[in-house]
Image (cartoon, rainbow, N blue to C red; front, side):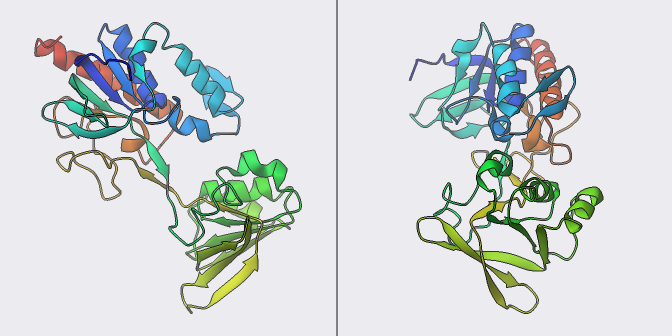
Length: 313
C-alpha cells in the first residue's frame, strides 16, 4: 500500500456519490482530504444500479456505472488521495482518527462518514451458497437470462415490485413472497403486479429455504400464521427486503436512530463535533444520488467553517 500522509484536513470514509462529492468540495475549498473506500472501485450503490438514471439534475446516464464515471472524473488532480481496497477497522470520533487494517492510523481535522448501506439479507439456508448460481444480485441485469424461467422474489417494497414487473415480461412465472398482508410499495406498482398474468403474489409468508444442487432448483416458504411450509420450483431468487446502514466500524458514542442510521443536524454533523455523516448512512427517508451529493456539500462547507473558526486550517 502507498504511504498515506499522517494527517488531512478531512478524512472521508466511503467512496460512493457522497464520498466523491465530499472530496470535490474539499478540493474546491482548499482543504486536504483522503477518501478511504473498502471496495476495489469507487461508486458504492451506483455500481448496483443497472437501469437508466434520469432524475439527477443536469446529467442523464445509462446506468449507475456511467454516472459513477462522471463523478470520478471530477476527482482529477486529487487521485493520489483516493484509496480503494482499504479496510477501515475503527474510527475514533474524539481523536478524529481512522485505523486501517494494516495498523496505519490516519488523523484528520474532521471526519465525513459516507459508508452508505448494503442490501439486507434473509439469513436462510442456501442464500449465500447459491449466490451467483441462481440467487441474483440484480434483476435488471439478469433479465436477459431469465426468459422462460421461474423466478421467486422476496419483498414487499418498491424494489421488489419493480423487479416483478421487469422480470415478468420474460419469465415463465414470477412468484412474489411477502411476510405481511400489506405492501409498502407504491400503489401503482401494486396494481400493475396484481394485474400481471405472469406474477403470483403470496402474502403472510417468509422465504425459509433455498434448495438446489449446482444451481437453485426450488424454494420453501413458511406461512407465518399456520406454520405450514410449501415448496415450489424455482430457477432464480431475488431478495429485496430493504437495506441496512454500514455502521459496524463506528463507536457507540455516535448517535443512531432505531434503524441504525446515523443521526445528524442540519449541517449533517453527528452528536460529536467535527464528525459528519452524509448520504444513505444517515438518510433513510430519501436515499438518492441527489441527496448524497447535497449532504456532502453541506457537511464539507460546515466542516470548513468549524475548522477555520478554530484556526485548525
